Every structure is written in structure tokens, then in C-alpha cells.
Image 1 (tube, rainbow, N blue to C red):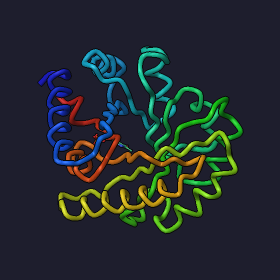
Image 2 (image 1 turned 135 degrees about the horizontal axis):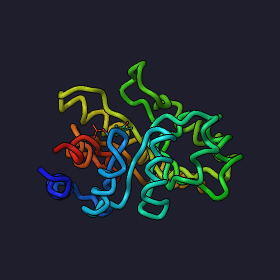
Image 3 (image 1 turned 120 degrees about the vertical axis):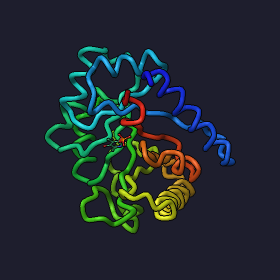
Image 4 (image 1 turned 45 degrees about the horizontal axis):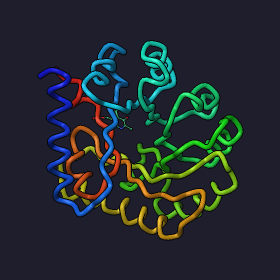
Length: 223
Ligand SMILES: *Cc1c(COP(=O)(O)O)cnc(C)c1O
């Protein structure tokens, strides 16, 4: 299938999953281009994708040099090293991987305007996964309040690598419950209305469980 056929197929699957929910908010599709060229990224934009995701500063810079900063929304989805904040922070619209206070502090120091961030949560508790423990999210958000350049728009997680649908659902559901708890508190610096969850292998399940952003690479770019 061509890239534009992939995009159509994914949008159709997203719609089907969305229709099973009672959610009013539309789900945003982020095309993850970390493993493809700028040419393929350009094809995604031509096929109607309006947000691209990269997980390394170099990938982000390379794509932007070719496509232009204004070509789309730019989402940073990988672990961001503190020393790379300066390089990327004015080049991105959304950060999906806020996972430590020191990173918030550095963003606060370097950003020229408030940055929309997702707090990354390690719901599954796997040692290999980045993210804050679910039980530490409330205190973390409290601390982040001291950094006016950081605006927490939601929570993000990566599901474990499993095909066990019940495990996936329970991870996504836990993140949603946590998001709802935070949103109820109506923190001025953390409206926390969004949920970034779901990738190629599990995005339909994530949407059924309330995702408002899905990050999809492989399925969109395969030929
Ligand atoms: C690579 C990546 C994705 C996309 O994964 P696919 O399986 O290719 O869809 C989503 N989120 C993050 C954080 C990633 O690193």
C-alpha cells in the first residue's frame, strides 16, 4: 500500500475505535518519522498528516531543515537529555516525555514561551521503561508548578510489548483514571485533559480506552 493508503486505513481504524467510545474530543494522529527519511515524512504531510513525531534531536533538526518549522506540528516523543533541551525546545510544539523534575527546570530556563508537555508515566512498572511511577504523579505535578514555562496538558505512557489485550487495556485504563484524577484538581499549570497512548500495534485499543493522541510510525510508513 502507498503512504496515502496507509493513512486512510489508519484513519478509518481510528474512527471505528472512536465510535465505540462516548468521547467528544477528536483523537489526534501523530505520524512518527523517527525511522524514515524526510522524503517519507513529506509524503505523510501530503497525505494529510498535520503532526510529526521524532524521538531524537538530530532527527527533528534534519526533518525541519528539509520540511520547514511551519510545515506541521512537531512532537518530541523520546527521552530528552537535559543538555539537549536548548537545541530542541523552540523547535517543538509538544513534548511527550517529561519524566523528571530536572528536565522541567531546564525547560523553564531555556524556553521562550510555555511548552505543552505530557508527563510520561511508567504504568506497567517495567524496569526498562522511562517514566514516573503512577503513585508519584501527584507530587511531581505539584513540584512542576514552580516552573511557569511548563504546561502539563496530559499524561503519556508506552504499553508493554505484549499481545495480551487485557494487559494493554488495564495499562491504558490506569493512565486514564490517573488523568481524570489530576484533571479534577484543575491545577492552573496542569489542565491535564489529554492522553497520549497507542502505537502501531495497540492504537485501536488505546482509543477505545480514551486516548486523545496516538503516536503511529510503522503502520503508516510501511510499503
Ligand atoms: C517509535 C515510537 C512510537 C511509534 O511506534 P510504532 O510501533 O512504529 O508505531 C510511538 N511512541 C514512541 C515514544 C516511540 O518511540
